[in-house]
Length: 116
Image 1: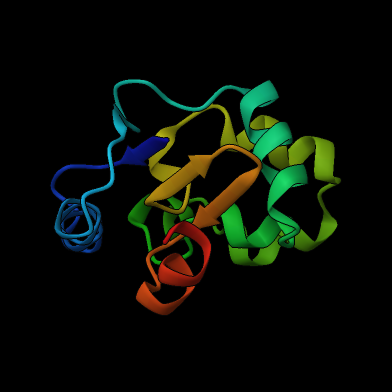
Image 2: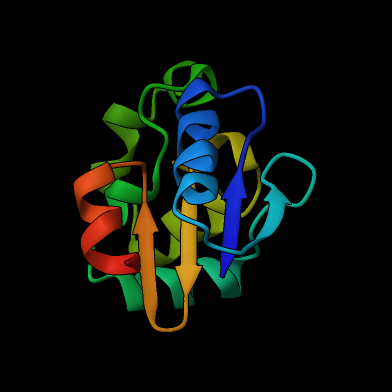
């Protein structure tokens, strides 16, 4: 299992505690220091079954400063994936990749159903 997170993020910290409390083993990856690549994002998006917009950190300062709320609708999925791969702070976190499952954001009930 791969746990992609941003250590200062309180939601990521809660997710990490949840993983530990449930005895799950995982590899940690700091999203700002080791941003997901275009190919990884494209694969994870495909595996997740989620709309691509769910991969954007819509509450982040970078998202807001780049006015992506207004820009994303006119961008192709290709352009959105390229943009996400440029900076980990644009990517919603945490992300868990476990086999064929990809979870974006921390929702305990969703994680319990998928990982336990």
